[in-house]
Amino acid sequence: MLTYTQICIKISIMTDSKEMIKKLGLTPNKALGQNFLIDAEAISRIAALADCQDENVLEIGPGLGALTSVLSEKAKNLLAVEIDRALVGILTDEFADKRSVHLICSDFLKLPSAKISDAFGGEPFTVAANLPYYITSPICMRLIESELPVKRMVLMMQVEAAERFFAAPRDVNYGPLSIVSRYLFDISTELKLSPAAYYPEPSVHSCVLKFKRNGSELPPNFIKILRAAFAMRRKTLRNNMLQLIPKSSVDDVITDAGLLPSARAEELAAADFVRLADSFNRYGNKASEASPTRAE
Ligand code: SAM
Image 1 (cartoon, rainbow, N blue to C red):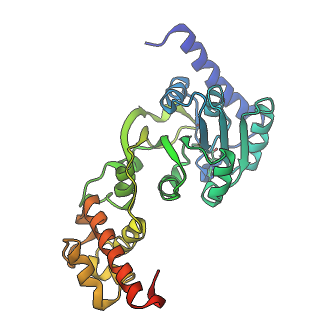
Image 2: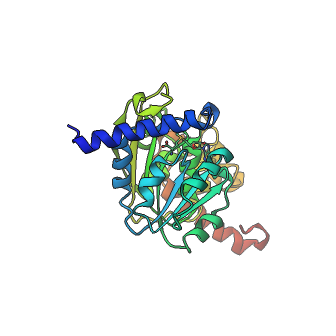
Image 3: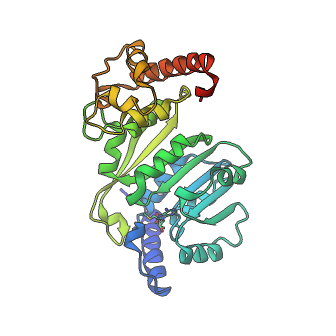
């Protein structure tokens, strides 16, 4: 049951976003995944989940600033990366008085990690976002592989995209993202939302996942091994690993990890890939001792 104040805030945010779009003559860009969140309760839940009092926060795709505004009340520094120049113009005016808010107009996938790191003086940060759904996986993979000090992530995405994070071996959605994200983070579903929570309404249902860093570290070459192993899903591990290891050693590297060369990546668990990476690293060290020119 919503309180009277919550209802007032809800109505005001709904009117704000829609009014703003109308007043400014904007047409939400479907190709950029512009479905603006107008459910005030969801906005405050995401901000609460981000738990970012006096912390550094990265927001991807701030849009019209509905979430940015709530996050900026708490964050020490907020870096918001938006691809749409027109929206960045609006946000620049909106947050002109907030010195803790930094806006960058860029495709997040092309933004150098150093720019993100510099914005936070190299300190750890939290990510909060209502993601552009068309690039959910590349954004998540980028955040996870980049070695940026991400403490926690609160991400809104399409329900079907969320299934990848919980997929088990042999599931159709199982892949590098499922493995590496669960290896590094404890992941939970915190919120489910219907299309009515957005303007314009998308044709899909959404949810909010929370990713909490669990302290694990990836062994060297883990991502490289994972990408190679899944390069052609229907191929055997042996055939896929031939991209990285010569024919003469490939079976040894795989069997030293306690795996069968005829296995397929989609059947293997994270622990199998950790052993495969360890075996690959041992082999790499031996190869570089024998022939320095082949060292990585
Ligand atoms: N955060 C706002 C909200 O909740 O109402 C908007 C979310 S909307 C689902 C996604 C936002 O991401 C849009 O503002 C869109 O312009 C932006 N966007 C799309 N592709 C992007 C990219 N490659 N890099 C940065 N922002 C992007």
